[in-house]
Length: 398
Image (cartoon, rainbow, N blue to C red):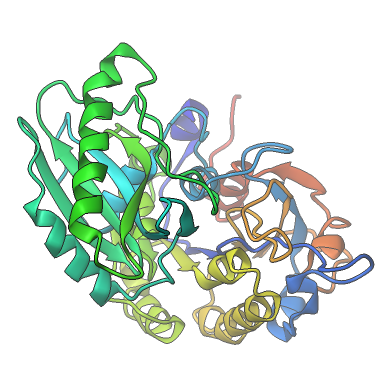
């Protein structure tokens, strides 16, 4: 990172990073195609034919990324140097004013049966309006010596922020990441986390009582206890003027953590395209995010993920008509419908700019990109490539 700060220079060339969340996939049967290989993507294929292509590993070979570290890698940061808990991402995503010492945690409203076993970790993907009503109910929570803020995020997701003396994020999740089992107890991972673990378990106890007659959201699962970190901004690191265009709050949160401005109120690719055009003159780095490739993969909905990829392909010309100097297309991790979860499989990418060496790839897919110019590289190197191709890095040394 220090060498990038030293080499970065400012110019007005435009870079677009288009991220299809969870882009990488797998065939549903031996000899089949992935979701990306199945999708009809004439615009991406046409662009790939004049681009440099490859595969990237967001966190290194074999490591399955969470969403925050996957994006940090794409933004050029070493994700192992910045441990970003999901709670902070969620809080920043709704622009909650966290203070030093606060601890935030992501909440899933979920469904449990009469034996206390989790039957649905996402409570049937309840709408945001229902989530907001449930958060209102949880305002009645009272924990001695601690202020508790519970805010809706999106669909079944919410965030809880705890404010008080002696709190720490050294606490394990209560989400078992599985159904048919009971939620976990929050446990301290160090002496500093003992008070927070007690607070978290009391929160769950009271929440269960308040929600016991609600259906399908009759319990809560907690993930990613986190305090507010200090992260150098993209402006400081790369001399960029960055803007994020995302629908889901978590990705607004990740963007704010690295100092991006964020457009609020976007709900669709069409609105993202309009916002991109309206703000084109004022920024030189644009992060455009599409969530639903990931959520369809997590649902095991192969055909649904194919359709989401095709939606992004139809959207691509609206970016290209603005004539960005560099466009980079990839994902933050793989979410194969076959697995219904994130995975450590490498993610395809392509980068297009003037003065590159187009390879022989003519279709945008996992196996075709594996034969591309770049082979398999670390995801954090993509930002370096984009800056270089935009003329934003000066020569190193004499």
